[in-house]
Length: 360
Figure 1: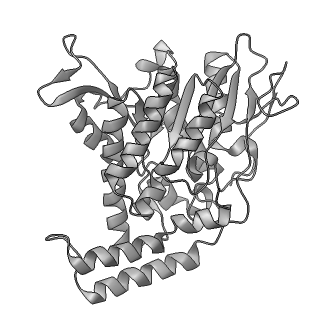
Figure 2: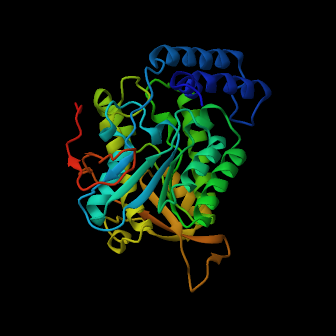
Figure 3: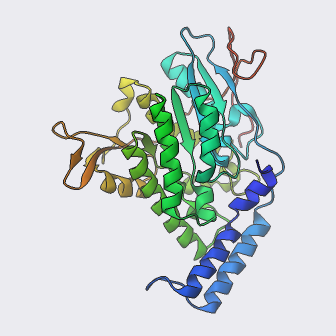
């Protein structure tokens, strides 16, 4: 596995610029950037972003363990796979990580203990999901949550290649009986150190990959939630609060908002019936899957799952999909410290609740 510093360098936007320049040199249709001056501008923007976004200092904290051990019943096993956004890079305490926040929310809403395994690797591409899935299957998960795609954009991985690896991961997890929720590629155009026109290209690539991920994941039996520019408006208004120290990854507050968007879908995937209708807003309904995917890519926080119309999975335009837009829930779960036995993930009698510290 790469060290955190190398992994974060792999995500850096100046690598995108080099690939943009190469594409621009050969032309890409009417909208291609063909002028040498424009290529120089992109490289200049990338160098500036490199100065603003520092290298990694340390790997993210782990949050593995049992949350809500005071509740009765068999613990629900949750595995978290993907890249730095799943690992929680940018925060300093285990209870601030996405996994801890998600496990806390699931435990409190379901009143069941939740055993969390964070298997995500900072810097991972979709091609790196296979070993994570192998490790996940050893834990017999009830729910797998995958956050992936940002590094595929910055490394210019062809969408078809990135999606193929993601679909393989989803199918293997579903075949093992796990429910799968995928947070699709975030909108890298929302990252402040990336300036136009590089920002516009990053946004376009991010949305294209997110739409392709949605179609493939739903076809494979999973659920998706579009993260998109979910944090964009808040980042623009409160960058010191929403960004981590590196100006690239979310802060604890930023991760909490992203988890709040995914929690209702995770609950619904686990069979919490009240979550299927809770918090819906205008725009929900049944669409063809391609239409739902493109709509979700443009609207952060949108859930897409498979649906039936008149007892059929497919219509003239392909598979049917249920599209749900949920109100942003800013009363997000506070992280709990998991109970650790002799090893991460061991069950125990109690869990010590605590608030998420370190907020601005």
